[in-house]
Image (cartoon, rainbow, N blue to C red; front, side):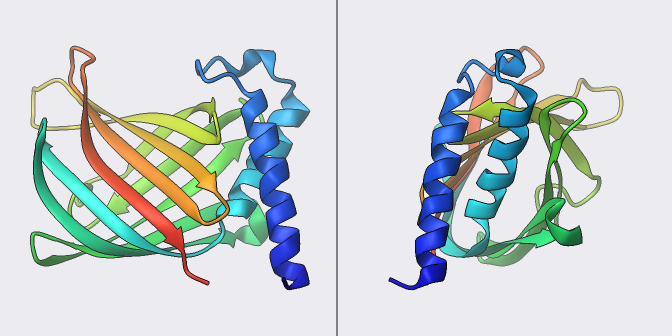
Length: 191
């Protein structure tokens, strides 16, 4: 095992241990600020790299509309203050590209993301915010579905399963608060 790979596995172990300190309930107030900040940095560092896998999409609850291969990359930007997740795939045979900026706000101790792509979020920027969860973090944003209509929520759950597997699950959340699985990306690390 190379020194870099060994260091990455140690870093992942520390990240998973530190993230598991955060309550899964989303109430992160009980976790000391310094632990949260260190946890976020270690988590993002452990997520860096090239990924490939499968992206599944549902337009209606329980009815799979598409399953496609996906390639992604997570890399630090601005000296590691933020991270960028870029991906490309297809949806129903048409190319799909997107990216999101990942951050941990050290003032509010909350995870934040901004997301755009050329299929789901091709008309606006979606900002989401949330807290640490077991092995990752969960954020919630809102999007417009039409003039004069109530916004829908978009809940995204990032789970670093282990050093070589990352799952990103996104849920449509109705104006009444009912979540429906919308997109599930299961990544494996490209070595």
